[in-house]
Length: 536
Image (cartoon, rainbow, N blue to C red; front, side):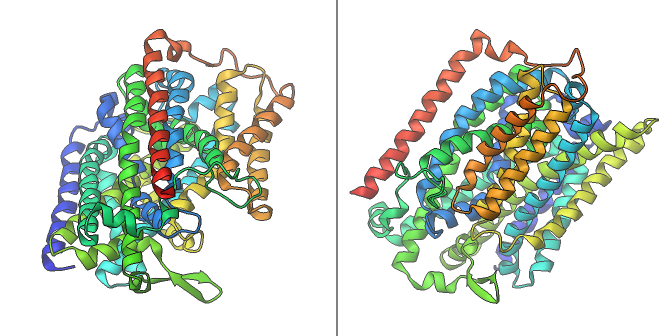
């Protein structure tokens, strides 16, 4: 990077910190810090959620998957079919109940429904799994920084951590939401710019289509099931497994649900989910098309893969690090100044995912552990300071996690989804058992949670030919079945416990649900179009 590129990056990072300082002036207590005073509108919540989803894992991992991963290509678009359908489930079944309770931690609901043990266990599971998954995010952007700075990985990660932790600790959720909107705009611009440069370098759209290997354009695979045939990315595991994954992630994971809890009303939360279900696909399609361009570029220039930095695959062996294909292409093709703009986009992707997760980890620690077990509440000012210190502490811990993830997968996007899929199904089952049943009790739910997680670990270790996407379903089914079988064991559920709120099924929301189904059909049609193009 040139001095001009660095000035672009420095100005951006400084602006984000100053923005956080400005927004922090209005904070008064922990609810302001964690829920932005319940003043966030549906558009800002939806865009913030999209920015978090479009993390460095996506910007680096999705193009790597599309262009280079074995069995990859535009098959990743099948995953997006599940998003609009997942939004319907959350809007109808989950969000109305949770939002009406005015929670800070979503796991507080589980104490009201089942008991304290369930709340603590689920909160701790979230904290451990999400901290490790966040380490994957730190790892991804750390690789890019190491290449840009021509420094070691440790220095690069520490630089990223310092900027993000300072920014997040100061600003709270309101700064997270506002900055995410800005970062999404910057990020989208960087992706479109990279696509335009790639198409121009290859001689136009026709040249890209004629150069890219046909299998990379195939986006629908109905020939495999992913159940014992070794094909992770077939249509059915990506649709069904993806549906369970997204319902769990958007509806039961504190890092996502916290923004819905920060909405002004239940209706605003549902509108945010509706917008996310409609707007996410164009964004995902853009960075998948960047992967198509990279596949064509690597085909036209076989030396491109050889110029990629190497990564350690274990056993002393090394392989090209495909996660660095995007920055490598930028360095080779972009003039000074524009390189800095793309690097800003990568920073934006990292910050938009890290800030919300660190805030959520701090919130669950404060609500589910500190405040829950203190016999006497802390003074408001001390509690507010502790919230910020917890954010810093979680930031430092996730930095340590970044050094444990390098050999998980050749794409950070795959790694992050594999980690979540181990627990997504059991997590979703516990919430839906609470919302939709009255017979299930804490003992059965906890036994089911342990059984669902154990089965997924067993599948990972002994049945690698079963797609990890199915783990979201197997975990859900085993957890639910175990809890229902043991429904009569243990103490009775706390009553009156909040269960299913039917407001999500009101007639006013059905046009939105039908619109999301229609949008899923559009996504399927786009996938069919790419598959036909590949065949011809």
